[in-house]
Length: 92
Image 1 (cartoon, helix red, strand yellow):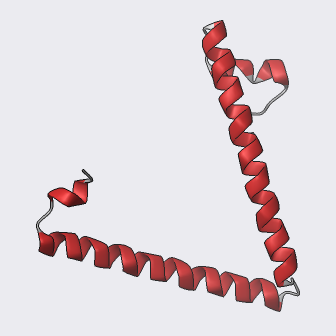
Image 2 (spheres, one colour):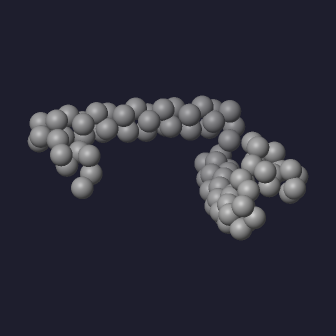
């Protein structure tokens, strides 16, 4: 059960309405950001390619983080302690 399933119907509806409004605000903000990028000369194809590359990067980074975590467990250290060994920055 989710936390909202314990709320009375009225509270659950209010929570859902708030979530919907927040999603609408985010959608509008993204539309405005896209319009701004388009006005700066970017094409939709270029933006879609960039987004696709960001998704790919994030998937690879997640896999790397998972591997570092497993290696840290095997060695009995923290992942942070492994970063210098592999010339990684904490912001990586």
